[in-house]
Length: 218
Image (cartoon, rainbow, N blue to C red):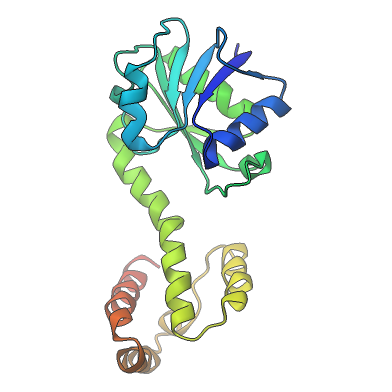
C-alpha cells in the first residue's frame, strides 16, 4: 500500500501529481517513501536515478518513451505515463478522467503502478517495453500535432477563437469524418491546394500529406 511518495521534479506533471496525492491523503515527502516518482525531463531520468541511494522504495518515472532500464541500478522499478497534456498551474483536476500507460517487469511492479494510477484518478493500461516508442508517437499525433494543425488553420485565415468549438465538436461527434474528402469532392480539394500554394506555399505539402493520410485512414 502506498502511503508516502517522494516526487522529484515540480514541473507541469510533478506539481499536478503532488497536488492530487495530497488531496487523496497520501503524504508527499522524502522521509521513508514507499515510492519515488521521477517527474523530470526524459534526458535527466538516468542521471537522477543513479543518484538515488534508496534500496527500499519503488522507483518510477512518468515518461512515455523512456525504457525502464533508465532507472538502473534500481530493480524495484515501474513507469506511469499520464496520457494527458498539462499546463503550469499544478491543478490536480488536469488528471481527472485521463488514462495512464503503466509499465513494470513483474506483477508486483505493475500492481504498484496501477495502485498509484488509481490514487491519481487515472485509468491504467499496461504498456509493453517494446511498444513504448510507437505508443509515444501516437500520443504526439493526438496532442502535439493538434497544435500544429491549429496554427496552420490560423495562418490560412480561420479565427483562432472559432477553432475551439470546431475541434471540440469533432471530438464530441466521435471523430466522424465530414468535409470534401468524405464527400469525394476532389475539385474542392484541388482548389484548396491551389489557394494554399498561392498564399502559404510552405503549408501545401502538409495539406497534401494529411489529405492522403485521411483517404487511407479515415
